[in-house]
Length: 165
Image (cartoon, rainbow, N blue to C red; front, side, top):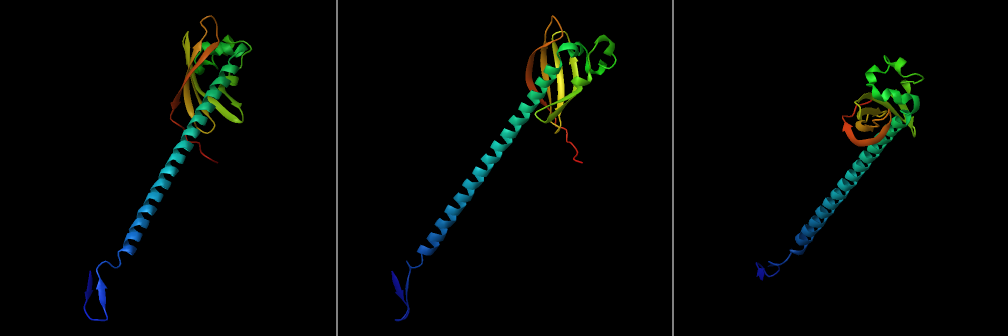
């Protein structure tokens, strides 16, 4: 439809619809692209956090295994005692050094014992890494003598923040 107000000026009611349509379509494409980019960033962030958590859990398991390796030979005597009594009961464990079970390292990672408690069949090992990560592990003890038969599942503990000096 065409309206003519004067002979020189005629207005079409269908004129000018392409530009607003193009702008609207461009805006929709831009918004969709931004949404997809945000979703990709979130997925990447979740994957990175998940990988870091798995690596930390692996390091904590390695620290527990390091403790178990050190708790052999003469030091196995300490498995029957809570860590709070290791210094007092040193005479009971001849040729054993409780300091070996207090802290150690593996692959440039330092770990330290929080505490150890046990009964005749199990023990609860709580330890921390140098970066503040902490965990507990139930250890199955040999009923025939002081030795660890199995390291149980990791039980995460609240992380300690380590002050950077």
